[in-house]
Length: 149
Image 1 (tube, rainbow, N blue to C red):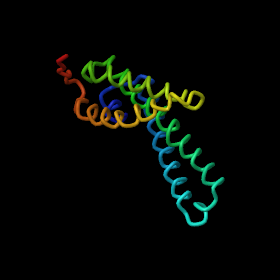
Image 2 (tube, one colour):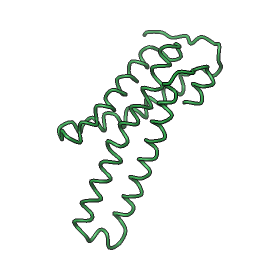
Image 3 (spheres, rainbow, N blue to C red):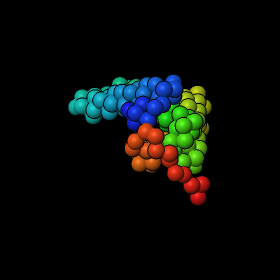
């Protein structure tokens, strides 16, 4: 997505923010998966206190540690796309909303009732990325025909 934005002429900081968010989200989900693998390793699963500690590491890194950078990725794509009119307005509004929800999911670390923000970011963000990938123009200089319908 960031490569396509650069190709389309986006030179704003939003593309760099999106790149950073994408790298961190991918790194955190990979770390989370590796810690889950460690949890399933024979002998570790028998140690209740170790297993509980690793569970909280997985939750922190794979939950909030994924949704906050994913919010940066989506917001970093949405804002320049809005300014340059590269995406339909409805998709940009949905993207900015997802980005804000992703950033607010940080509060689930201190307010347990805010934990619903993590899946509210995680699952719709993949759908948003797919839609945005199809809606971004393939070539620079071609105006995006958008309808508000």
